[in-house]
Structures are given as C-alpha cells and as structure tokens.
Amino acid sequence: MLRNWGALVMYTMISLAIFYVGFQLVNNPSSFLSSIIMTIGIAVLVFGAIYFLFLRNRVGAVGGKSSNEMKKYKQAVKQSKQKYKSSQPTKPNKSKLDTKLSVNSRKKKPKRKNAPNLRVIEGNKSKGKNRATF
Image 1: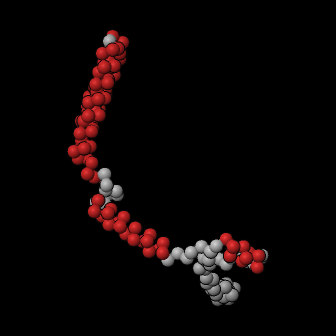
Image 2: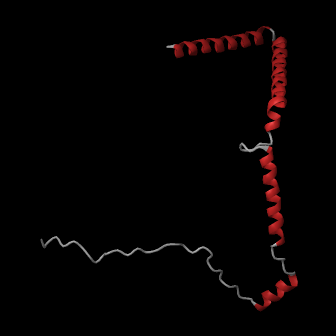
Image 3: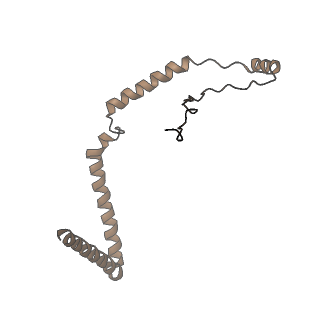
C-alpha cells in the first residue's frame, strides 16, 4: 500500500509541474523562457562542476582499468607492433613479380588452410535385434 501512496504523490507532483509550466507559458512567456534558460544554465554549471571535481580523473580508465594499467597496455602494444613489423618479409619489386607471372601463367589452386577436424565413429550397425528368437 505504501508503494501505491508513493506513486500517487509522484503523479500529483508531475501533474502540478505540468500545470504550472502550461500556466506560465500562457500568462507570461518571456518570464517562462528566461526561467527555462536559467534552469538549463544552472544544470550545465552543476554538471560541469561535478565532472571536473570527480569524474575527470576516471576518464582514462576504460572497462575498469586504471590509467597505470592502460599505460602498460599501450606500451605492450607498441612493443608488439615493433616486434612483428621487423619480422615481416619485404615485398618484392614489381619487375620480379612480372617475371614470376610470365613464367607461372597458371595459378595454383590454394590449399585449404583449415581442414575440418571430423571423425567417423563406427558402431555395430550389422548387429541388430533378433526379436523372433527367444
């Protein structure tokens, strides 16, 4: 019953607020617009203050990671890129590619890289139930 009472109070407050906004809009539109602009300005100032005081330091934390962990992760990514960048083979010149293409005008069919790992399990299919004999 307390829940119904709270909902009733909430609906009453919302309906009074809507009535007041409509009343202000009809009777004094300039005052209404100035109060709306003032309310938006105050909300922006409060949000900005909360952001700069509390939330600004946590922006670097992505997915619950601290900024220190993020720095370590970025360093590891940088080292990994350097490692694999140097181990990649260099690309051959265009003239070498042209000679290879002229010699091998036929293209080879590429082999399948990932063969399916399937296996047939054989059972005793020939052994059936003989229901005629007891």
